Amino acid sequence: ILGMGRSGTTWISNDITERFRLQDFGEVFQFPVKKPISYLNNLLHSTKIDKIFKVLIYQLEENELNIHEFISWINSNVDVVLIVRRNSFDRILSVLYSEKTNLWHQKGAQNQAIKVSIDAIDFKRMYEENLKQVEIINIIHDSIKIKTISIDFDDYQKNKTYLFNELTKKITSGNTTSKKIRPRKKAVKLGDSGASQRIKNLNELKNLYNALEKSSSEK
Image (cartoon, rainbow, N blue to C red; front, side, top):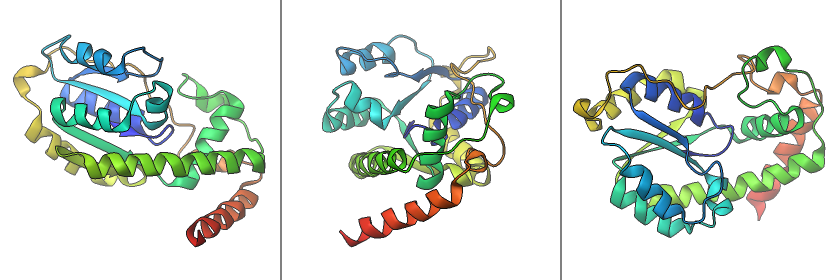
């Protein structure tokens, strides 16, 4: 699974892991490793059970993993790539909200969620970072030669049946486990409305986002 932070990758990964009883390695680059490709190869051969793992785009840079080297590894070793996307404005708000409150996937996060204001400078910083990550994910998407499924997290529930049907074609039932599998990290939603309804200066940020989008499209 490829995606950006706070784009719904954990939520979707949980669903797939529990539905197909796969070996869940979670975010394989959550903590930096010295030789990322060797690390991936070791994970790949650690079990015969079909497995699922996540890579967040920013983690490629953190681990100094060349994008084209990573793409080459995917094309040689992976059966299906699921690329998860999310509305950029909502994703940016979610990242900044979590940074400000330190609420990510903790149990009980819904009850701790509070309303905050987001600084315009921080929003601009995350907007620029989002542009860079979108560009990288587009490069990866266009360069992958194996089966690729793109999912918009905002429409995930509507497209969930399609996703599971496509994965059923690829996953070998004999290579799964009969045991009940618990995902490495359990996704926690802050509420049906996400982080947006917990931002005090939401309208101000919407206007800023629209202005940044207009400026970006004119470049």
